[in-house]
View 1 (spheres, each protein chain N blue to C red):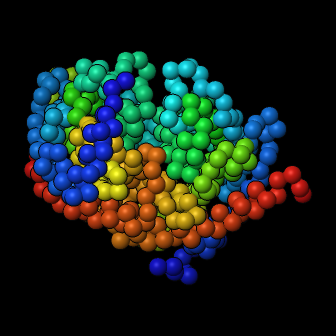
View 2: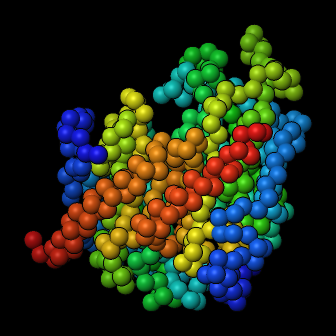
View 3: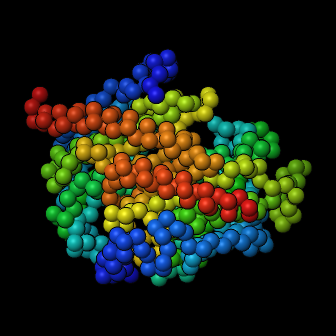
Length: 264
Length: 234
């Protein structure tokens, strides 16, 4: 297995104690984010997001199916993430591991809990037919912070998506023929921001090396300045003071990212 | 923050937990075991180890491995759950490991593994919190070296009101701003080892929720300590 050598980790921590990072960024500064939509023709919506050298592709596919019995008049959503072997020498094939499951679930909750998609508008026939929105996330290159890249990618792809035509008589989706209707989305976009603890310092948007030497993280989903999802990861604890500091960083970074992502 | 007029479906005060029971030593075969319940939510945890890690290539020469497995029995909820691991249970298993790792002295048993099996026998919300509380007790019972216990509780926001220890009916709260569910895990000295959140809340109110969780987990800690003292006697 490939890991970041301890000597690099020690130096990363030493730099951070002086408020510095290897690539010259401030602790609460993201790398350059580029967002491109419409990158895959056959998807109902798609996006490519790069944060520095980290890259993810997100595609939206839709299908018509039966609603869940507890929500007969609401559409559904499913988020999956796959860490492709092509994107890192570390990723192995086979059954999805925990990392990919976590990305899928964290992105799912960020969107679902903020009520970003109005599922009631995705009902075709109550109790019988509703749209399911599939959000599929693939890593193309892993240089740290796949979690936030995946979250931004999902939003960009959702914003780009158009609902396909549906033949009610035949009960068939006419894939490839898109209507002019976008998905029913709320105005405020939910953005996932992960704050990492490295040594005793906090930072955002780690490179692969920085992520390797971090020992705790909190991912926060935030839209319109309101937090709608959160998850702490990894093996170190945080003091209440650090937790409060993280919330302050999230609010600050959110203002910055929000102006970029809203525009898509 | 605490309003007296708010009515909870089961009549509890906003900062009142359900009746808690904790019992240590309930699976004779295990090296350590415990039951923890919040009202109708019942979790059982059993610890096996430290023992040899198989396969050998999974061994860590520097520190031991903590391996948790969270599982809901198929009949623990009204709609049957398909037996076997799901994405949800995989995530909760990992979250539980992360919640416990800060207090387990893994360096004391390099190359070895400690298995913690958590089963939810009956569920009425807050199952992961009950599971973590049971697991902490079972680890202590097994004599696994630990710096401390951890205690876990769910804080909810129903419309605008913060409450402690959610039940299912409250999780599904729809009035006003709806429900926000926030499970927290703390060490007795106030280190946060686990937090999750689903719903809608401002950063300011979230800070208040943390304080409520600190108070509730301190109460749970006392109950856990008492349960450990009762081992072997009645």
